[in-house]
Length: 254
Image (tube, rainbow, N blue to C red):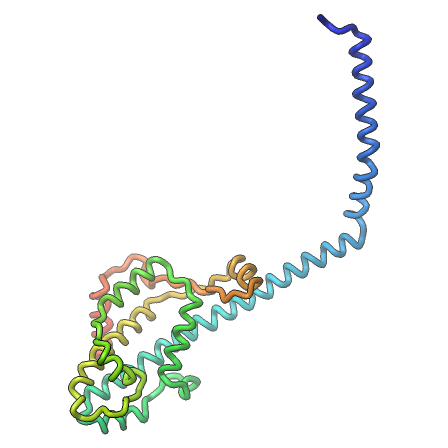
């Protein structure tokens, strides 16, 4: 049954009245909020927050970029320095006829970079390992490194304990000329490992990763971020791992 016209008019008036009442109640709130938002002190505080956050991000981004660049250069320099020193050690052991000759050679291991002259091999190796903790190795790079490590010939734990220090230019006490043959066999294996490590590092392309997460999140929570990304030199390798090593070895043996 339809409602009489006067009822509909009455309901419409009530709705308009309620709307005016609600508007009147909310208006002071809106005016209060608008006054705060438009007040000079609020605008100043908002500007200060943006400047602080933006300036902090930009400063951390610049620091991240500098750190990444320095770590990248250090990675390649350390890799080259370690390889050349160990290459000299392997050559000296191979061409020595006595332990005394080896000791004499180890007393004057040549260096590549003058700023690394005073550092010992084990110190250089530890520093390189620390840098690698700041690197995010891509899946392709991890696969390449696994292939390289799989090509290495393992050494016995006994030989590693007894002759291992030779890789860092040191000889344990008690080693004499009767151990020369075993020492040469050990250093040949370690020399291959040294070459594999160098080839892997030489085929590693490092690029900075100073994203929002590494800059803001990691720095904000005092974490040590991975600020370098490692990719293989060749995205689609032309040769297999063995072929690459053979080509590098051809250069090493010249």
